[in-house]
Length: 417
Ligand code: B12
Ligand code: SF4
Image 1: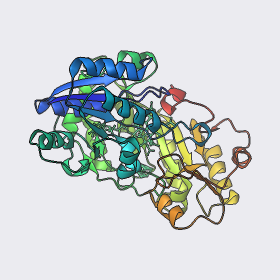
Image 2 (image 1 turned 180 degrees about the vertical axis):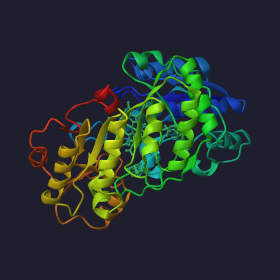
Image 3 (image 1 turned 60 degrees about the vertical axis):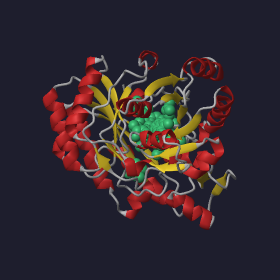
């Protein structure tokens, strides 16, 4: 079939090369479909650009890749799905193709997002094999379900997707965007605030990952960003992959997300050997108090990374129902003493309908704090907080180590380079 894949992500802080589009395009072509990628990231008039592209190719299916619902920053909230819904509606008037949606925005609630954007079908989870399966239904004239579970179709662990073939990296790189790569999908963590919690975990074959990295390197991409939920979900797998990356001597400089545990000394040595330059450590006070990890674990991760010369940024989420200023003071004092390179503080929690936090808040409003936003589907932004900006500033106490997320638009890899 003739399929157009659209990247409507025009948020440029920083610009993000649409990795999901690249992966899905690769699998579609592998299955013999005719693929066109329409990247709207940098165009002046997205509807005009879409009309022009669709007019020349007359696709039978248009797939929209929806990455972000919103910026998830209370102090700088940008809601993206309104523009996406308008583009989808415009697309319908431009051609009579089926409209399919996919992308991480669906994690906010597949049915809720689909109702909001009004598409024909949607794949939630990996689209590599699910979209070709949907196209088979359509080719055979069989009516498919509106929502397709991409996790059950998944991807081929050993497949090496073509890179830099579907998307022009140049305008991204010019604006400090970097190419991404994924080594696994899903998350074994169960954090109450996070839409990635408990997503089915599946690693890629390390040989395929290293081959893909070599392709990126050949294409001139030396700086990369990891696109896993968290890198160190399975420490043995992570170390095995790092060893292979080190052996391949790719000459990369890359940034990653990881959680405080599991880790060991060798893990950080291997990270350094492979060119890991910036590391974002995801920390939340709820996991600390629940004993998922301790301040000692955090200290160990920070010290080991520092010893290897890896720039370490902490993403610190605080302000859960039931917490108070006194206990948080200890957490801030800890970072003040250990001193990673930077600590980004979020104290205003974006609530999603099906996360643990969302389920709790829907069942019973917390006794303390406020819930802002009234969308019963939690697609339009809803935030919970008990902390004021002044409270947050009091905890920071003028220390430049800390910055409040949303008051400045820069990602960790940009801040630390
Ligand atoms: C890595 C990452 C980053 C890196 C990206 C680096 C890079 N160069 O790529 C950086 C640090 C720059 C970043 C920035 C931001 N991020 Co981010 N990021 C991620 C992360 C961890 C991985 C994204 C990724 O590439 N995954 C791998 C690819 C292959 O997966 P994928 O895009 O989902 O695509 C698959 C499927 O969705 C599907 N699919 C995709 N498109 C399509 C299309 C069709 C038609 C079909 C059928 C299927 C399909 O198939 C694909 C292959 O399996 C996700 C969380 C997650 N695990 O998804 C958060 C995530 C997407 N980010 C998020 C946010 C909020 C942001 C920022 C807005 C943060 C901020 N305030 O600055 C910015 C936005 C930047 C931008 N311009 O969009 C949120 C979005 C949630 C929300 N509220 O909407 C997420 C979900 C994290 C979270 N738990 O909250 N991010
Ligand atoms: S915060 Fe990290 S570990 Fe927790 S569920 Fe989200 S991605 Fe997984």
